[in-house]
Length: 127
Image (cartoon, rainbow, N blue to C red):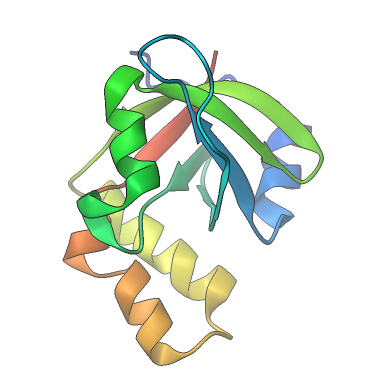
Protein backbone atom coordinates (compact mmCIF):
# COMPACT_ATOMS: atom_id res chain seq x y z
CA UNK A 1 0.00 0.00 0.00
CA UNK A 2 1.07 3.53 -0.65
CA UNK A 3 1.96 5.82 2.19
CA UNK A 4 0.93 8.92 0.25
CA UNK A 5 -2.45 10.33 1.16
CA UNK A 6 -5.02 10.81 -1.57
CA UNK A 7 -7.31 12.90 0.62
CA UNK A 8 -8.08 16.39 -0.64
CA UNK A 9 -7.38 19.34 1.64
CA UNK A 10 -11.14 19.87 2.06
CA UNK A 11 -11.68 16.20 3.00
CA UNK A 12 -8.82 16.30 5.51
CA UNK A 13 -10.18 19.47 7.12
CA UNK A 14 -13.77 18.17 7.24
CA UNK A 15 -12.81 14.86 8.81
CA UNK A 16 -10.35 16.49 11.21
CA UNK A 17 -13.07 18.79 12.55
CA UNK A 18 -15.75 16.10 12.80
CA UNK A 19 -16.35 14.95 16.36
CA UNK A 20 -16.76 11.33 15.33
CA UNK A 21 -16.48 9.02 12.36
CA UNK A 22 -18.82 6.25 11.22
CA UNK A 23 -16.91 3.16 10.09
CA UNK A 24 -18.11 -0.03 8.40
CA UNK A 25 -15.84 -2.87 7.37
CA UNK A 26 -16.12 -4.77 4.12
CA UNK A 27 -16.91 -8.39 4.94
CA UNK A 28 -15.36 -11.39 3.20
CA UNK A 29 -18.38 -11.64 0.88
CA UNK A 30 -18.02 -7.99 -0.17
CA UNK A 31 -20.96 -6.50 1.75
CA UNK A 32 -20.54 -3.75 4.33
CA UNK A 33 -20.87 -4.68 7.98
CA UNK A 34 -22.64 -2.64 10.64
CA UNK A 35 -21.59 0.96 11.12
CA UNK A 36 -19.82 1.89 14.33
CA UNK A 37 -19.18 5.36 15.70
CA UNK A 38 -15.56 5.97 16.71
CA UNK A 39 -13.13 8.82 17.27
CA UNK A 40 -10.89 10.00 14.46
CA UNK A 41 -7.77 12.19 14.33
CA UNK A 42 -5.61 13.80 11.70
CA UNK A 43 -1.82 13.81 11.77
CA UNK A 44 -0.33 15.72 8.87
CA UNK A 45 -2.03 14.49 5.71
CA UNK A 46 -3.14 11.24 7.36
CA UNK A 47 -6.42 10.22 8.96
CA UNK A 48 -6.09 7.74 11.84
CA UNK A 49 -8.43 5.62 13.94
CA UNK A 50 -7.94 3.06 16.68
CA UNK A 51 -10.03 0.90 18.95
CA UNK A 52 -10.33 2.16 22.51
CA UNK A 53 -11.03 -1.45 23.54
CA UNK A 54 -8.05 -2.85 21.66
CA UNK A 55 -7.95 -5.76 19.23
CA UNK A 56 -10.88 -7.62 20.81
CA UNK A 57 -13.39 -4.95 19.75
CA UNK A 58 -15.96 -6.27 17.26
CA UNK A 59 -15.56 -3.39 14.80
CA UNK A 60 -11.77 -3.70 14.82
CA UNK A 61 -11.91 -7.47 14.29
CA UNK A 62 -14.16 -6.74 11.29
CA UNK A 63 -11.38 -4.71 9.68
CA UNK A 64 -9.13 -7.77 9.65
CA UNK A 65 -11.14 -9.64 6.98
CA UNK A 66 -10.39 -7.45 3.95
CA UNK A 67 -8.71 -4.31 5.32
CA UNK A 68 -11.32 -2.28 3.43
CA UNK A 69 -14.50 -0.47 4.31
CA UNK A 70 -16.39 2.81 4.20
CA UNK A 71 -16.19 5.82 6.49
CA UNK A 72 -18.31 8.91 6.94
CA UNK A 73 -17.39 12.05 8.88
CA UNK A 74 -17.88 15.77 8.45
CA UNK A 75 -20.10 15.27 5.40
CA UNK A 76 -17.45 13.15 3.65
CA UNK A 77 -18.25 9.54 2.74
CA UNK A 78 -15.43 7.43 1.28
CA UNK A 79 -14.44 3.87 0.57
CA UNK A 80 -11.12 3.31 2.32
CA UNK A 81 -8.37 0.81 2.91
CA UNK A 82 -7.25 0.20 6.50
CA UNK A 83 -3.46 0.39 6.76
CA UNK A 84 -2.02 -0.93 10.02
CA UNK A 85 0.64 1.38 11.41
CA UNK A 86 2.98 1.23 14.38
CA UNK A 87 6.14 2.77 15.69
CA UNK A 88 6.81 6.48 15.92
CA UNK A 89 3.52 7.57 14.35
CA UNK A 90 1.69 6.30 17.44
CA UNK A 91 3.20 9.11 19.54
CA UNK A 92 1.80 11.70 17.12
CA UNK A 93 -1.57 9.93 17.04
CA UNK A 94 -1.62 9.87 20.87
CA UNK A 95 -0.93 13.61 20.92
CA UNK A 96 -3.68 14.24 18.36
CA UNK A 97 -6.19 12.27 20.49
CA UNK A 98 -5.16 14.20 23.62
CA UNK A 99 -5.54 17.53 21.82
CA UNK A 100 -8.83 16.80 20.08
CA UNK A 101 -10.61 14.91 22.86
CA UNK A 102 -8.85 16.33 25.94
CA UNK A 103 -12.11 17.65 27.36
CA UNK A 104 -13.18 14.05 28.11
CA UNK A 105 -12.23 12.30 31.35
CA UNK A 106 -8.59 11.50 32.01
CA UNK A 107 -9.54 7.81 32.16
CA UNK A 108 -11.08 7.94 28.68
CA UNK A 109 -8.02 9.69 27.24
CA UNK A 110 -5.72 7.18 28.98
CA UNK A 111 -7.67 4.30 27.37
CA UNK A 112 -7.51 5.73 23.82
CA UNK A 113 -3.78 6.44 24.21
CA UNK A 114 -2.91 3.14 25.91
CA UNK A 115 -0.59 0.60 24.32
CA UNK A 116 -3.59 -1.72 23.88
CA UNK A 117 -5.48 0.88 21.83
CA UNK A 118 -2.26 1.92 20.10
CA UNK A 119 -1.77 -1.63 18.84
CA UNK A 120 -4.90 -1.13 16.68
CA UNK A 121 -3.89 2.17 15.04
CA UNK A 122 -4.86 2.31 11.38
CA UNK A 123 -4.39 4.94 8.72
CA UNK A 124 -7.42 5.39 6.47
CA UNK A 125 -6.47 5.49 2.80
CA UNK A 126 -9.08 6.54 0.21
CA UNK A 127 -9.64 3.95 -2.48
